Length: 397
Ligand code: SF4
Image (cartoon, rainbow, N blue to C red):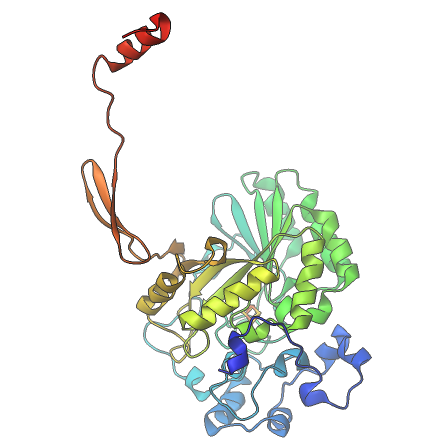
């Protein structure tokens, strides 16, 4: 970690490793996509790789692709293999080992798809996977089995069948678009998709899950925001894990989305050596609020194959929430959750603040460890109401 990571200021890391490029190209998201770092030689020409990483990159070719936008790559430390950004996007050999508890589909999504690409697990809402591509690939991705296009499994999608299913299922009021990253679709395709969903009367609101504002803030153009604002109520869940990711470009892109009236929440994943401390989490959530983004969920890392080097214990997650609750603004505190392995949905995990419960009262602990009793309501004794009634009417007891 760098000392500046805990600093609440927003800085730009450009041009960084691309000192020779002109600013106009740098701000063009298509240039960013065309110039992603996705080969071992490109990687080695910019940073000093360890053997563990070099072997990981070679292995990634048939598991989850490596691809990093220049914008995000600039956050990587050239010499430190423990850099919290580097560990998120540069493969390591540990990914090759599958622990007995790990699963290819840790959230049991494939078994809840009534039509290809549409996950219907909760009664009133669905997850609609609309692409298998992202701007960069996270080494802990829950859907690494289907994103990036290099693994054994491919994401099957059938948008027409999904629209038909949604039209028939009037209980669905909330659609979450995810993937891959939906904001990688062109403005025209995204506009058509949102218009089609909006034409279904019982769909009350749409959410988009995206890491593009972090990996590729240049994609958050005024034109994109202008188009998105036509489809309210529309929410966006961004995904950022470390305060260094919140650069001045990211802050400005998030500002454009907020100005378009889009409420935003952040979903972080708790990752070993990346954001598994109270001080890093606190710096992250404070910067998020400054960007008008509400910290929403802190996920315990799913049991993805090859993720042991990135996962923490649940006790460590509880300790982080304990270190935030009461110690900073309530709005800044995400809900810590575990996605029940195999398809249990999100289960909230909290420190235990209610330390005893007996008939008539509970005993509570506050953030400083002080104890308080909170009693149940006392039943009104017989005759009291009659007396009060009499006093109200006659003015005396
Ligand atoms: S951006 Fe999301 S979908 Fe894409 S690799 Fe990262 S976690 Fe997976």
